[in-house]
Length: 254
Image 1 (cartoon, helix red, strand yellow):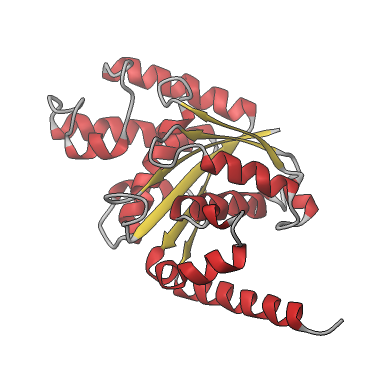
Image 2 (cartoon, helix red, strand yellow):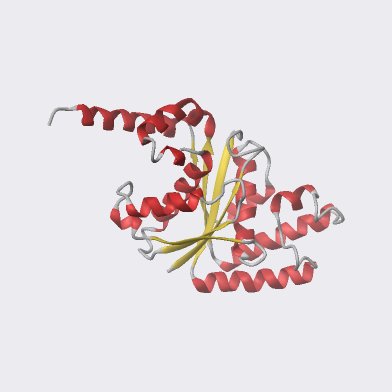
């Protein structure tokens, strides 16, 4: 069994943001043990054992980092990135550019129908993209199942978990991919420390795909330990084309 820790990043709200990012790190039990060991030691040395690293707040000096100097805040992020790279976990990033989705939202909802259209939401689409990307990029190395833990988020609620279990039971993905979808749960970053790793990856990826400079992103990808994909206009158009083809086949006489 492999273990993934995931988080998201967006601006304003899930439905209003231009870019919605879901990022996750995946690794073996041994790799996560090593990350936890390293990051606990770093937090103790930095004096942040009670709060850890919340990337966006740490980067901007928001509470609870308002009394830390810019140099101290930089060091917190730098140490976390170093511990991620040294532990050997692998990152996956799904960045959804939502302008195309907004134009086609009604089409997608109509195709899904009344029982499934509730899943036609930005955060669920990005979760789906991240899970599928992780299954695909790790598929050449292993067929082990992946147990997912995502950061508990009141904005997204429990519908991501509902979508996840619905997908396992459906034929939307190949059976061999669904077999790799292990347990799904939500956690707290102060208890499941890997969520802090996912948080800084999501934050850095959001800045990168939003066209803003991110030294965090440059350091995280330098060791080639991250696979990232932007789901932009071409993706939404191909999805529309697939729907049109499915509807055409459905209308053909049998």
